[in-house]
Length: 463
Ligand SMILES: Cc1cc2nc3c(=O)[nH]c(=O)nc-3n(C[C@H](O)[C@H](O)[C@H](O)COP(=O)(O)OP(=O)(O)OC[C@H]3O[C@@H](n4cnc5c(N)ncnc54)[C@H](O)[C@@H]3O)c2cc1C
Image (cartoon, rainbow, N blue to C red; front, top):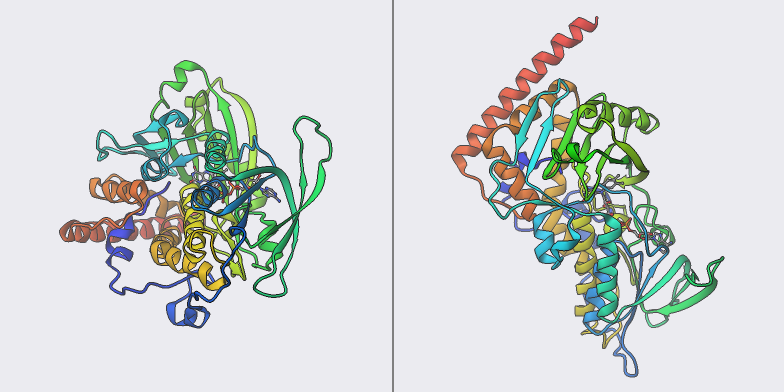
């Protein structure tokens, strides 16, 4: 959830109306991408005796949202999820706009966080959140609860939910033939190995997360990834009071060389975690340091669950092939620096499904690659600046302890806090105040100059 403070005077001042697309390489420029555009056609065959059939592989936020939109709009929808009680390793922080946009009931939100402490390498804590309006908060959810809710809602809207492990698919030889999917279906009552099955569909959405088999099937290519580690710690009730509506973020070489450590509150426990791209082998050391930094506040706590999972660092080289598209972590939609991916997963699932609904005229026609490409174009146009800004922010502020001290110092500024929270909570470009932007730019440069001077002093000491 780290900030988007620089947004106000960098990406948000974008003047071009046609922003870059990240189709083949992360963060490439528009002129490098033009040749990949395919305009949508309406020449795809009409379906007379049935509706369009789409399989969504993976029932996380991306898959659940995609399946709901498809099923609501006349598409014969199959959602294949290997583990219906899946407890995805995740901090579970979601922006306020997700609650509204996805019509989430409040009882699936464990905590409403209204205060955030940003804690520097030297343990200087800056309180952020003072600019929040009374109704504003960051939602904290448990993924087993959120994912089940979204899947069940898709099912109520007509999606067939299959408890199965997707194995592979055969590709069509022309634009009319189906994709043939192979999966192992589990029967909860019988247990055991499960039955091998096949399913014919007209299009496939790969929402199967960071280790996506669908991505492998279409040779989507790899991405850099962070490894994130998290412990769920049950702490005494009196300690839990402190975290009732408060989350903490720790920065420093000790907790991570390129990410941050966190303590996020859940219904009856806190989630303590950290991540790294560059020093994966040291992740347990960073986790211990994160726990140590928070030790007074989680003293007497009992670790009830330990979990780890990759977090993609940027979109895959290819996110689409024929009638197969990737969404969520399978596509690589997690923001750098903040590691946020739940909202982007749900949003990309929905956006991809909307493109299918539109292209197929509510399931009455076959679709083609051009229809799916509309989803990618819309996605890139909407979110490219956010990804780019967080990428830059990470490069500037996560590079050394002095830079991190500067970053935390900057977070004390009310204007930074407002821009940061507004950008995070609403995922919308918030127009800045030019005078405050200027002040912020000057302060940022001042902080960075001080950070640089401090770094040089520290280097001298080391010699
Ligand atoms: C430790 C950690 C903390 C994080 N904290 C946050 C946070 O606080 N806020 C935030 O916004 N993001 C956070 N993220 C990122 C977030 O968890 C992901 O971006 C998000 O889960 C992506 O959703 P998804 O639906 O694309 O994929 P996933 O949530 O990974 O869902 C994929 C689903 O596909 C299923 N699946 C996989 N393979 C198959 C198969 N072969 N057959 C059938 N089913 C299959 C899986 O069981 C799973 O249910 C965190 C990540 C980690 C690792």
